[in-house]
Image (tube, rainbow, N blue to C red; front, side):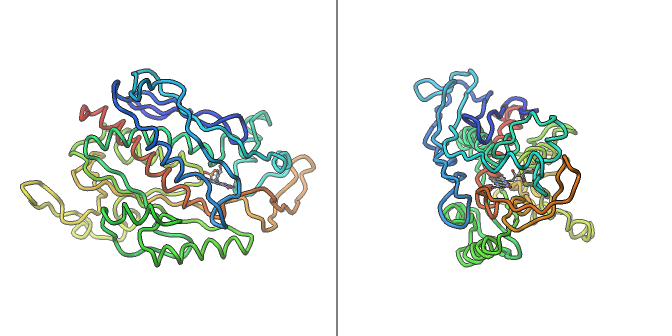
Length: 358
Ligand SMILES: Cc1cc2nc3c(=O)[nH]c(=O)nc-3n(C[C@H](O)[C@H](O)[C@H](O)COP(=O)(O)O)c2cc1C
């Protein structure tokens, strides 16, 4: 459905070329002081920029909160926040009802909804819907911040360019935010920019990987079985359009390791139980173990590319060559970094509220 969470709940509404996109957020503690500036700053990170790295769609994404906040504090009622859609050009999209874009949602959506879905700009399947996740998550991160929990997402791969070194959290918090691609290392970040520009010049697109770290979590966050930390985080991450993989800690690499390598040895540091390594990604038995929660999210290359591609005319049932003319991100990843970060905050706040930690 269009809602996520139990105690902290985000519902998304709107469509890419409709009047607005937004979130209904429930479960923010009443009386909590909400900074609209913080939410706006997160929306600004997600908004398209200028230049070859993002779509030329010029949306300023000005936040409007229309309920649930009074005198700067949460009232306890649903918080409804939205951004209006201003720069819409739907002219290219009618064609996709007949000739679906390879890699996009056009074909299955057409069959499922019998053509009644709002297909303009990708409708509900558009990356624009992630503004709603940012609005909800940016409220959650403010609550988490008061409880010493911080979340950071950073780009660690674009196409074949990888960030292989670990940049310490406190440095990455600053450098990744300052980078046009969300990379914590300046030199690797520049190579990532070139990788995107090259794909764009080739009328093509490129994918990548976002790493997310949650620091300061107590031990034992997570609910039994179906609501393990991994289950809820991955469910949220797979809701982000374009996501094709999520892995925690050492991830799929665990398959080639021995138990003696993969087990994170326990130790005592400053009177606290810690582990010497973090192959588990801070999660054991679906519960946080007190180490940073770490996961990586793989994004596919944007499907809407200017290069001619093979599709079919679903009325004539004939093959056809498709050239996409609309405005698209040559790489989803730089704009997805704040989405991953804020969406992760929403999941962790929900689990902390459910576990009685807040
Ligand atoms: C921030 C963001 C921006 C996106 N921009 C585009 C875009 O410009 N063009 C496009 O075809 N897909 C874009 N996408 C991805 C599509 O929305 C997505 O691929 C499509 O809905 C199909 O869903 P799936 O890839 O999860 O299968 C974007 C996704 C995100 C998160």
